[in-house]
Length: 112
Image 1: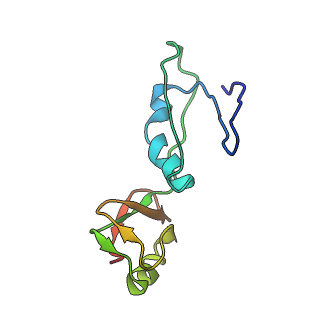
Image 2 (image 1 turned 45 degrees about the vertical axis):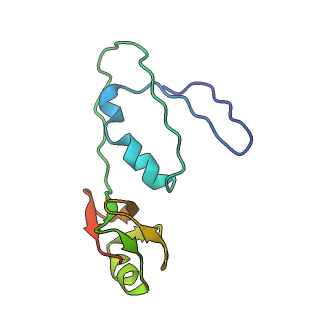
């Protein structure tokens, strides 16, 4: 259920009523989709009857295997696994989301 929205300058605010079981994994999906720029706030609304099935994520995340600075060779190899958000010489930390995996599930890749 989507409610009215009002956003400030340069931002969009969306309000939804979502069951708790639908919120599992949504934070990482939105972080991936917005390249880390989302601000997510949740609040309990009410207890309601089950409405229907919830679809699963069809793509996972690409995670940095180790901390360091991304290099062109590592990034080129990782691009075969999915869409990347980083460029050569970007600093990464271990388990940082650096891209979207083509398949379900997360995959650690070495870009350093």
